[in-house]
Structures are given as C-alpha cells and as structure tokens.
Amino acid sequence: VTRRYRIRRADGDERWVEEHYKIIRRSGHGGLAEFSAVFDITERKAMEERLVQNAATLRSLINAICESTLLIDTRGNILEINATAATRLQSTVAGLRGRSLWDVLPHELAATRRSRVAEVVQTLRPLRFEDRELGRDVLNSFFPMLTPKGEVKQVAMFGYDISQLKHIERELR
Image (cartoon, rainbow, N blue to C red; front, side, top):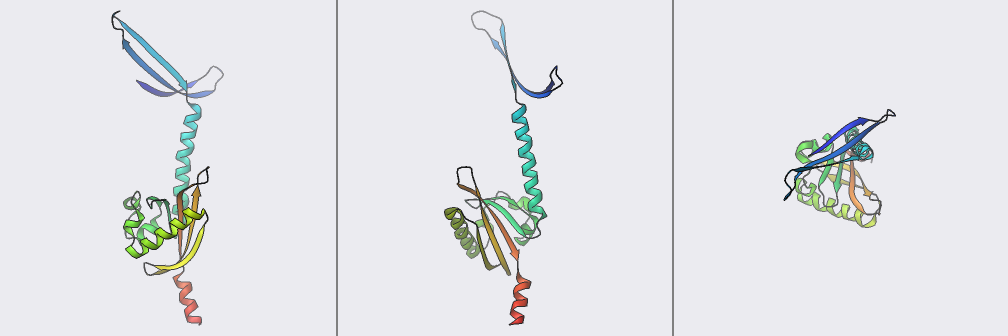
C-alpha cells in the first residue's frame, strides 16, 4: 500500500511524505512481518505543482492570443492549440490536441508546413515567412523549443492573418 499525505513537524514545518507499507507472510516461521518506509517528497510535490501551474500558464498564454497559435512536437503532433487555430481548422481544441497537424491540414499545406518545421529543427533557428493558407494571407513565425542539450523537441507556431493589410497594399498600387 502506498499513501501520500502531509505532516506537520514539531518545528511547525509542513512536509509531504510518501509511505510504503507491506505485510509479508513469513514462510517457514509462521506469522507476519510488517515493512514500512516513509520518504520526504516535499520537493517532488512542489515540482509537480510547478509543472501543473506551468502547463496552465502555457494554456492561458496560448488562449490569450487572438491569432492561430500551436505547439507541436517534431513529428507534427499537436500538443497545444488555441481556439482561433482550431476554429480555422473547422474543429475544436479537444478535437485537435494529440492529432497530427499533417493529417488535419490540406495535403499541399501540410507538405509545406512539414518542410518548414524540418528547417526549424535542422537549423535550430526561428523562421518567419508569409504565405497564403486556407484563403488567408498569413505571416508565420515558427520557433524551436530547445531542450537543455540544445535539441528541438517542440516547435511553437504562430500565424498572423494579414489579409486586410495585403488587400490595402493591393488597392494602393
């Protein structure tokens, strides 16, 4: 049996502990033996809480952006996506999270996005470019998310709809 709970030490400090408890039948001797080990997991619990908070902060930041924003892994799996991007892909956040971006984009757009992501992964550098996607002129920014070892594990993608700006530019010519 494993339990996690808080304790208050004599000095008033509150700690998280994990207790492992097991009853063992002693063969040959009859009877039972009890084994119990208690570990201080306060630091691990604090790290878990920071991870949960960081994930919530990331989701809040992504959802605060009124343009298409995604976080994918290097294989194109959608880790996070905001409502704007989901709507433009005619789906929902829940319906897209965990799916391959390459499977939900039109074939030609998926191919260009895949090559752009590969460029970011290979060069370890951000990439900005304009193109036309899903009937919109878009300024794209792809940013590599590096591990402490300097490897790209995720790519942040931001697409800013510049269709109105492009329309005004064409009219002024």
